Image 1 (cartoon, helix red, strand yellow):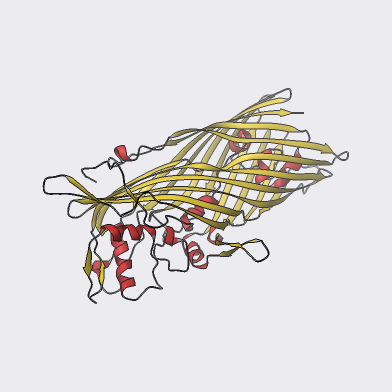
Image 2: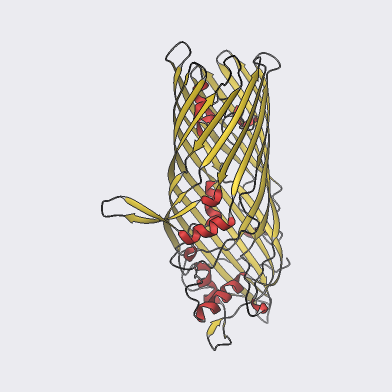
Length: 525
């Protein structure tokens, strides 16, 4: 994408509020990473039947019931991203984004209480970072007879011809209509004109996290049956900055900026069990179920748009919507999908431990909800956003996660670990971020961006080392995560009567490669 780029000292902001929840944002908030203690991560998290690691508190709570001694642990490390390709056009204008970030990942305590010769009642608390949003994405590709502003123009024409109930009008549409010229359509309606694009560049920096605070009660019956329940509190801290630019016909170009903060909290309940089917065998089977996380969230956002061209003397002229730097806030609810899991584990002579876990969660069942405020009785109420949920059902699907792991103890005190995860895609390749969803939904009315990425499967490789001496242990882990995706700058639009009005975006391949180094310090008492 070749362009003479102008750094704007200031940019015009939204003429209306910026963003609300939508399918792709909700999917990001509902996604969890593999994280916890270094032992858990080093074994690929495949410990839901093996238990005796505090990180199982957030998946199979029965795993806490296998502790025989009380234990405290704390974990932290560093996360860094590979292959951050900065598109040449991004240059000085999208320099945000640290590829390397320190991370405090876990702290917890298990208190083991003996209640019989072979029975325990255990209480536990654990904090861990269930999602780390640190991510830099860049993309760019040519455009042919398509642009972001053309999508707005097509919606404007449809609404002008009476299709008001079929199309919504968003913040970015307001801004484009404020800077674009007008024309007359075939029905003599005054409508927004458009400019075809010749290429685009995109840069996004996401950061922040979801912190999960888990409280657990668990125990065992005669060393054969282990049961546990966990109540979790989730703390959302999401930050996102993005920039989208297009080269347009007529030696013009546009720049759209977006800044998003999402904060809030939620809670869930998790229950699980582990069984030893054979009395004299260490072979174990684990089953668990996690309820949806029921979030109460708030978005604060800002957005910007500027259209620039060169006059006859070669000087840049910038057209911006009237008004200053505007902000918007929006409260909403979100219920993530249920999660189900089954796991098996086996140990051999206290030398080798093997674990295998399968999880399933249907992301198409994510429930985007309106915050309806306080009812007559003083209770906070919400209702499902039916239209947005239809798009979620169309764009997302069920996700299967397979985790395998092993731990070997070649000499006393030393542990060597390895693991692998496969996570199937949650996005359908036909899925899209619908920019035309009609009222009364609030979701798209506040949008100031149109991009979305259909991520494919995720693969994780993990390795770890551990050393125990007296009552202390130190564990190290390395995790490599890779995911490919297809980036779309805006949804495709097809006109049933005139192909000249078709607005089909050029997709761009993107990838996300993350490395994590993690260390856990533990003490048994």
